[in-house]
Image (cartoon, rainbow, N blue to C red; front, side):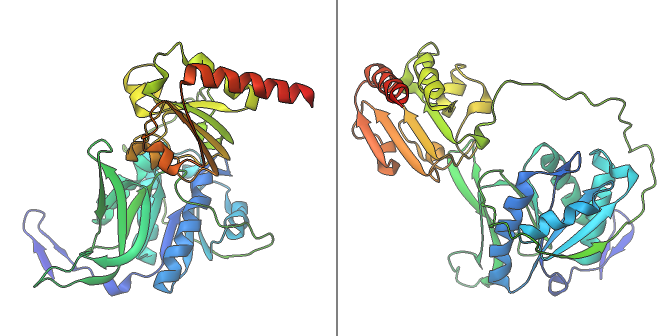
Length: 360
């Protein structure tokens, strides 16, 4: 037993062996499951396989039990449902109470939360409440040894969750572990993990759990929900992306990229340098400090190919690079490369595609 003098309370030392299973927070908004939930289940299955355990989705909301089958279809072995009118809309305190209570009762070894607007608010509060660590905005998760490289005189622990995330503005990559506390918690960037194939008719064990909710001064009251209307397409959903970097030269030159995107039915995106220059909004940024994308076709135009950018788009099915520098690192990951002046190449490509489509 540990005695905490500052709080005049007794805290039971954590028994790590009590914690089993991989849990994921299955985010839903307006009774529709967010894509990140399926991505987390997909990655959770990989982690669970390495640990010889199963995946449990935690579904929190009001009148949401009917969504359990969707989670089962994407690989959840169990679904814990916390259903209460207090959980109809996302609010920090009741959701924190719900997820923390699930963790305290069922003791997962790993707890994954999407790094969405909701997850970035919920994850840190839950981790603080249950006294464990949290690695935020992860881009890679795997089971391995910690320390990764053995250190003389220090025990190397096995079957640890190794959580990788960009650090220092994306200029370095950090791999973090939480060896002494459970669960091992991470928020995971949307778009970086892959969903498992959907299995129609799959069923999961459904467990209903409600810790009880007593509204107090920590419960905010939602007076009105105003949904923003935007004509900006989410680049994470785009099948074709025409992405520009500093080499495009000016914000006006992005008109060339927009013309190409319009012909292909694609969307314009950009690198961090473009956002830093104020040419394009942050929502369009691809990379470790932006969004991770997996389109069918990715045009990298005037983009040098810094590791921070490549990490956000290297899983694209086909990568086409256009750059005047034939030694640019982007050509190392491109399936097709064109060396030359983008001011000549992009308009010529656009016109050729227009002619090809007109002929059809």
